[in-house]
Image (cartoon, rainbow, N blue to C red; front, side):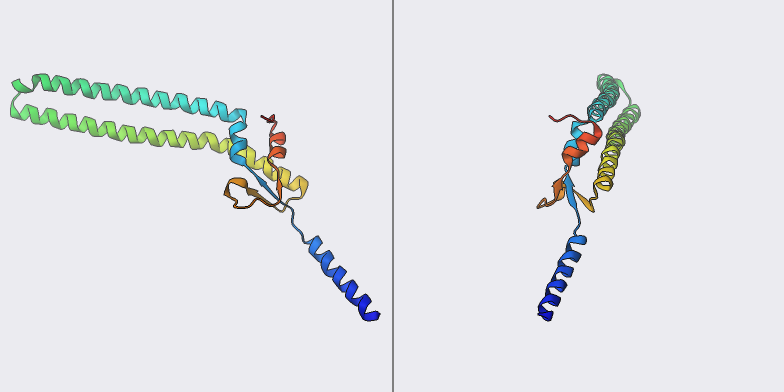
Length: 167
């Protein structure tokens, strides 16, 4: 009888320690939340406008190169060999500069996109962290990287914290 009581107490102690150490897990789909934020739409519009401005600038530069090439083609027959070589070298340099500008424009566009999205992601991450602390979550995982989503889906709670109405 004494051994049975000790066994029961020991088993209860072990089960209690497991439940005390149990961790609260959650997951969130932050990408979906970001896309639902009003900030995201304004960032997308700003990025589209920036992209159009860069495209117009490149288009203008390319138009100037085309005009230079057409002028060269029209005057080529009356030029000396030395003049043709200079004009062809100038044309190649302009084309290389255009390609460099196009690459720089793409880099600027990517930087702008990263800059705009980083601020939005920071808001989402802060909301997730605040929610995790307030509700006692040990870990919050990104839903899109999980093979199996155990724990609580806190996406709606994060939406509520950010003031996003359900779609």
